[in-house]
Image: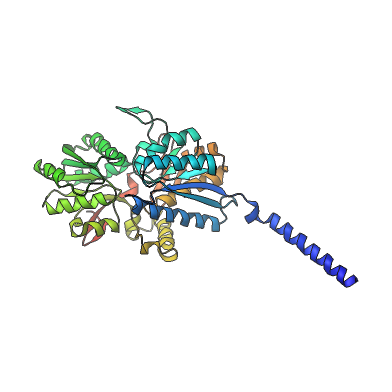
Length: 398
């Protein structure tokens, strides 16, 4: 009987010890940090949104393996915007009212970003967007546009204005001072057109003509024919997705001699794949990601990009379906910016917002970020390079 009683006591003690261990276990005790992540996982921008989602999960896994955010694991709540403004608004409202997220990253397109801007400001949820256009972080009335407020809106990709400066600097150095514009009629295209028209005079460059197209169009020959008749020294196109490759094919088929300069939303193997031989000679600004091996060892981004590429290619093997392109690092930087802010101030939304706005010297995949109340992006022209397609590959433009 004593033996049986001892066994029972041992079992009780073991049970209590196990329960105590589980109660004190950090994994079970720590509440997750909820981050809403919405991208265009379907629709015309899915080729950008889907790999962005994969990278978001990759970097969340990395942070969690390293102890999370002050011991709290990141929980990503994924959603598809379908690239549609209305859908994006519905998703964000769910993040705010149902999921009760601590922060948000995404969406993919400038138009969907603008659609949720008012909801972000009303909900006061710090959001780091992965869109290219500037309007999402612009404020107040400028010309005939009212951009509202952007206290809680930040973005990881370079501003369109920065990419435009890189393009104009290059054109000026090449002595190409008379250009024509071909831009998409969506939010991103209009943003590029606005900055090109505003900044060209400062660079001594004259815009002698401008045409627009619908990003869903399958042929832009008519617009290019009109532009070619004006005899520009270069043609600058501003769009993302398959439309850029169509412009390149049309430009090549028409035998236009003026070089084609694309925007920062297109560099990547997909562009060359879609445009084929027509892409030869095309120029475009990009992050350093596509030519990282050529960076000097003194460049602070090189080690960060190398770690990113190793995870993306060698551990997760995402490159088999989604080869690395200029968009690939945006979700990495978006989550890292949030995680760094939360590590320093916790998850209080107002404090996170303030910490994001005062981020200095964060070395990311896309550049070295120095944010301020006046600039919720924090990247300069030194974060970009001009690339040219040569023999089916991207190389540094000379």
